[in-house]
Amino acid sequence: MDPMAMVSLQADVPEPLLRSMRSFIEAHPNWDQYRLFQAALAGFLVQNGLESREVTRCYLANLFPLRGGFGPSLVMGSAAGDGDDDADSSSRPGGL
Image 1 (cartoon, rainbow, N blue to C red):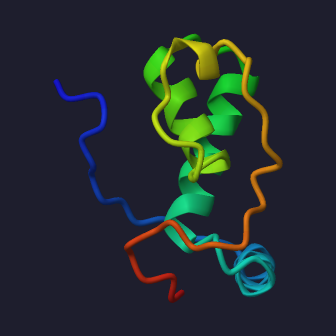
Image 2 (spheres, helix red, strand yellow):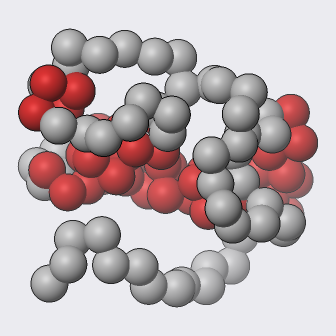
């Protein structure tokens, strides 16, 4: 199985959460709904004990999209960034 294979999913989201998500995306143009959801889901799993290199890489790739490839040195924590770059690195539309 390809660890970076993409699947689509649909979820019901409470209105206050959706409004907050839209506000965040409007204030941070380098984020879109896909990147936000992927980072949130991967972050939740990592912070709650899931030990998976693939999920950790997905989490880091969403936080640091302009940092290039994720080799062992980045995953081990030798590179840093604030995850709030102004350039939009996503090729998908960010409409909600």
